[in-house]
Image 1: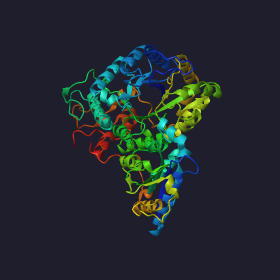
Image 2: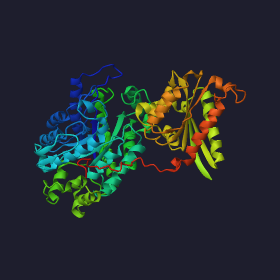
Image 3: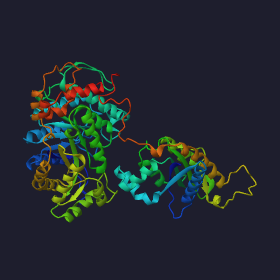
Image 4: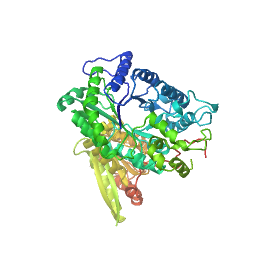
Length: 400
Length: 213
């Protein structure tokens, strides 16, 4: 199981001081936070992608490339990479390059984005959000898996004999998660390919997340990538901690009450009850987080939102200390208990490389070969060894 | 015996309000018409005022809390809906509109709807046709042809003794609207339908739509 944080990269005024960081300060703070993630023993740092103020991370791989040089262990990821408005060719190139820079410590979460004008700014139509996500990802996969790609689609200019460079590190594409709050089409897409499904989780009730994850798991099994319990699930979370629960509530309340997403709406107590937000002691956070497993099953990745709503850098770093020292070590131990042996671990480049070595050699340029439809199988090598070619069976079933 | 459910949504603010009074009269008349056809009707009535904060929180956070979710489910799965608002500043009240803004815009598709409104004077009676009716048309609801507007003076107008018989009195308008709604509710199977929130379009292809297969 992997633990980490994801950042939106918002520039928000600290409601307790009236201070707003400059873009430069915020970007530097994000870089500091990412290095702190490694220092306190977490596993993943993921950044959002935005193309409008008050958000700074428009160029995630630039930022992650720097962090790659400053860290040795953590996985660098995104939350999310806009598959709708970015050219899949550029995504293929950027993340393959980052893979080499970071020696494989890279994966990414694809999302559609929720800022309407970004679509027309990048020449797209928001009403085509789902078709864009489907088609662009279909191309992205091929660019990483086939050396020369002939392509024609609905949305971008055709390609003849195009080779995306650099080729993925060790010939293995970065692991992909698909993120969606409420679109079953995206859960279906993730299941179809045997990719990961990341549920943002934090803005909606747990009952909703439970249904989406269950749907994804069932479809994962339907497409032949393994059992529903073996599907690759990531969850968001949102916490604010203090030794004493009441102090946490007192300190976080002004940030909650003024937060861009839910501020001036429900009370912190109501929102805490209705969503995974936990404001309290480390023990409360541990209990709440362990409870996620009750409604999504054993899962692979837990990311928390930590640096938002104007919280100062110092506070965020303190929160990360608590997470690393008091919370995550307990979670690692507790989540490992009763975890079935055939539930995959969180995806890593090393596991993908080992699985690729074990997999039967296929002619990557033959486009009707669909062994690529079993990403999950790739990170659960023991299943590969014992099972049949699930990916092919699944593809045949859907006539893909 | 045939059973149907009828949801009533009233955006009246005072208690009691003439908006609720009109809503109740429309519901009673509709239930009576359905009874004539041998249909037993369960009526669920909601005052939006009771949900005002939940509705605004939904507007701000993007999700309905459990209390509001239950109410939305009851309204959208009913065989028919009676929706009544006071007219404020030439249109539906903000609370009324906000409620219909936060529900899923596909959730009223095909639902038989009777619209009503109240106001101090008859001058804004067309608000039903330039504000409420287009809104429900956008939501693909089936709005019955007769909508019922009750100005304050209508509550003091009787059935008999009208010199001008071309002007329908309030009770007559209610009766006609109830007849139209009950005919659609009687035929509805909406309340017994099983709805799958994960249903995908029939031609959905997770690998994209191009080239056509």
